[in-house]
Image 1 (cartoon, one colour):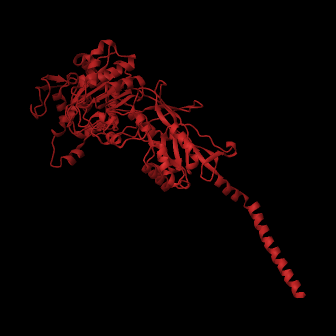
Image 2 (cartoon, rainbow, N blue to C red):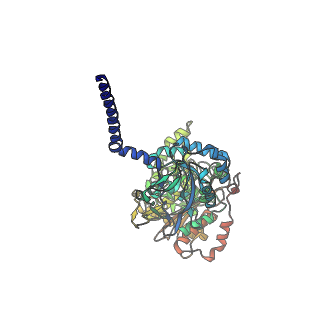
Image 3 (tube, rainbow, N blue to C red):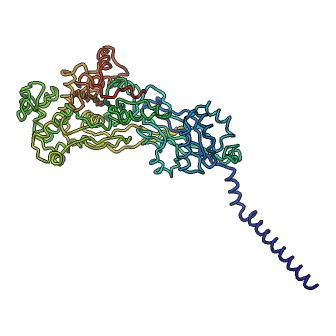
Length: 609
């Protein structure tokens, strides 16, 4: 009997011990670990989804809306829930090959099987509706209201604005901490890239209840824990819409570039690189052959000729040579040199001039564009001095520009010649620099800064494309700061001599380039190259007595500067200063429209295919 009682007590003790353990476990689960396990439960039923902000809009200097956004639909996938057997159905609904869906799923899985990733961007509302009708058959598939850039005017400004495209693997790895995900859009060039952080805005988030397939059922807690996105800031540019549109129309069927600056502030009023391209092609899937044409053809429209080309400036460099020679003291304003139609060092077969000018001084040499005079100036000047002065005018170096696509050009010095001409060189080797030829190359942007410095008396302005940013809701405006301009150490009286010579070009040498009622100054140039026909080059500023605008134009493979680049610059200045083009110059306007650059092997029509 005693043994029975002992067994009973032991049994009761074991039962109580087990119940005690279970009670303690229950207490731990319900009280101590409640937050952890309620969190896991919530994670199984609730999904966080990003809310993309509206990308900042872009306006011209006068408030004209250039770039905005419009709604677009994107299809998303969460690989963990996706059933590979539904690929045929999805490809049929999207009207794309199965392989496209398979590749997208694999890329999303490689990125993160647990995270929602972009599958297809830019689907229409009709396609989305068909997908939603089959939603129950497509586990792991969801969608979001995305946006795409839309362009509101005839202005293209491809190389200024830049394009937005799906983020590359390189950028994704570098900017993962900034909230970018696979398939996100990001600025790839121009202002869209350099001001990406400004115009992108801040991501928001929303919480939604999901079913076992990861598909949204309804907002979690009626959206009380959602975080609103913040739109990106608007950009207000320095670009003048009407002048930009005019310049683009004048460059149809031409290769080259034009840059117009405010001579006092460095604001870029117009920047054209031709051929350009329609930015809207990046709002949808881009054909491989189109991308190849943009980037690899001989035309290479994606290349920014305005800031990155390496071209000889021709005779537009003669005013620079004149100021350098005067400042270095190798001539005086009244010094003359005899032009017999060629320079005596090379004879008529090498350093030729287009005319026989006789004894000629510096001001007349600029007006008459005497090659012989400027060959002699470069013969007298040390090439290292040439390099030093050229850099002071902004050549051979990058400007503090607010887009990344830019080249420094080429300005030689003695070290360069020692490296390139290792077998030896002499005083005649750099003489071609005196007429803007030989071993040198500049960009249209550099030429525009240079002529602006002549116009304003020796200040090298900092070129820029953005005036200020604006908050889209509050209207708060913030100015954009740039590096200070620099002063060029050349006597003001030498700038005066050069300006008088440039005025003579417009009055006596090329009077058809004069803006009706607006005195101006300029210099033509015809630059030889290895591509075919000569390049047409022109620099100018206006008005003469109170300069407001400086322009540099290069038209490739088209001939004389006074008949192509010159008229383009003149019409641009006239549009900016007077608001239109005088009817008295219709003949010249039509001629410019008819002029075309010598064709390269590939046709411009390739972009349309």
